[in-house]
Amino acid sequence: MATTQKVSPEQVVEVLAAHRGATSAELAEILGIGQSTAAKHLATLEVAGTARRDPGGREGGRRLADRWSTTAPTPDKAGTVRSADRLGRGALGALVREYLAARPGEDLGPTQIGKALGRSQGAVSNALARLEAGGEAQLVTASPRRYRIVESR
Image 1 (tube, rainbow, N blue to C red):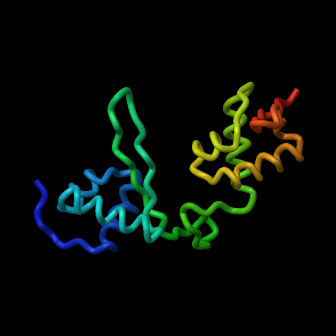
Image 2 (tube, rainbow, N blue to C red):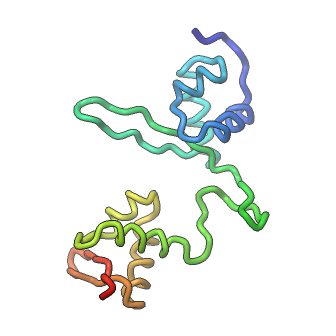
């Protein structure tokens, strides 16, 4: 059972950074606070852009808990601080290429790919257009736009 304890938003962010993908119930347990209090902290952090919610979805008729992660800046391999959500130059194109390559023969649209990768439809659409121009992806249908990876021969 949770105790009544004052927890700062900074403490929530620290715990969230250490336990990426935790649910609000898991964070409440770790912090020693009530689940509704943890959920309120997370909602506030989400609005501030410090936390990101990954919807849990459904399994059968049961709703799965949302998973949370921090968007606080983290240093990359070169020591440069970047937002956890911000991709480097050309990285989205590589993610889209990998996603298409993992599904050969499937016709996929920017919306579906964007949702799967957690990226905007517009950015994915631009990446697909660049992949098509480079001969790595093929536009299968124009309306609705569907792409397929170009398989090497």
